Image (cartoon, rainbow, N blue to C red; front, side, top):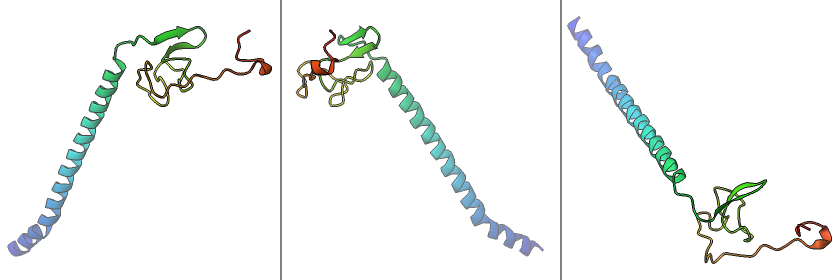
Length: 112
């Protein structure tokens, strides 16, 4: 009887050890994921708390915009300057291209 019990315990030891290792790994992984999520949220918060830049302005009917609106690549957004140089600055940007005005023949773009 004692031999049988000892044999069963010895037979179950590897599976119990494997189960313990798997739970430990799962706990470690979830802890790392939780820490990564906290770090990402902190980075986003710090990014959103940056001071207002001098090239931010309000346009009636559109809202707040940043960047040089005369540039063709301007995103016309309050969060993103342009597709080429999103974080700016616009002054002295080597990608600056003046926006082409729409012809008067089409009746738009001139504002008259």
